[in-house]
Length: 192
Ligand code: GRF
Image (cartoon, rainbow, N blue to C red; front, top):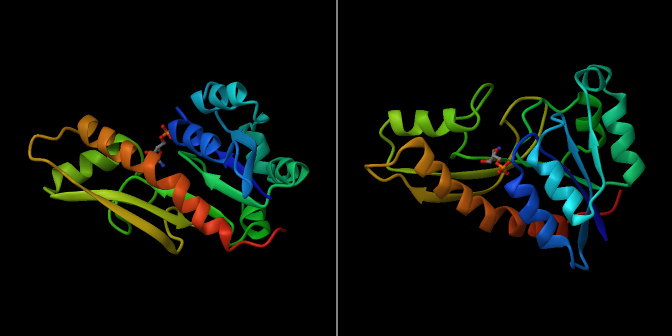
C-alpha cells in the first residue's frame, strides 16, 4: 500500500478527487494533507474525508525540517502537489526525488515558471491567441515547473473563452486525468 501525501494551498478540488479516488483503493491511500494556508479549502475537504491535516508556517518552510519530519511521521512514500504555491524545501525534494508530482494548468514548457499560476496562466494563453491548452503532470525538482513530464492532456481554447471559462474546462480535465495518472505512476513505485 503506497502512502500518498498531498500538498495544497487553495480550494483543493484536485485534492478532493485524489482522496476520493484512493479512498477504497488496494493500491494507495492518502495519509496527509499538508498546506501553507490555514484557510485552504483543501484542508476542509481532508477533514471531511477523515484524512489527517497539517498547516506549515513560513518559518517551518524556512527551517525546512518540520515539513520533512511530518511527511516521514506519516510514512508517506509519494507526494502530490495539487495547487501548492510554495517551492518545496530542498530536503524534501532530496528525500522524495522522483516521487513528487505536480499538476500545471497549461502545456509546459509553455506558460510555466515562477509567478505562472491560477488565472495568470489562462490569461496568458488567451492573450497569445492559442487555439489549444491543457494540463501537464510532471515530476518536481528544485525549479518551478521544470521536472520531467509524465503526461499531458489537451483541450481547445474557444474564440469566446475568458480566463474563467478556460479555467473551468481545464479543471474538468484535471479532475478526470490527475487521479488516473497518479495511479499509473505509483504502480511502478517501490515503497520507501
Ligand atoms: C489547478 O488548476 C492546478 O493545475 C494548479 O492549481 C490549481 C488548483 O486547483 N496547480 P484546486 O485547488 O485543486 O481546485
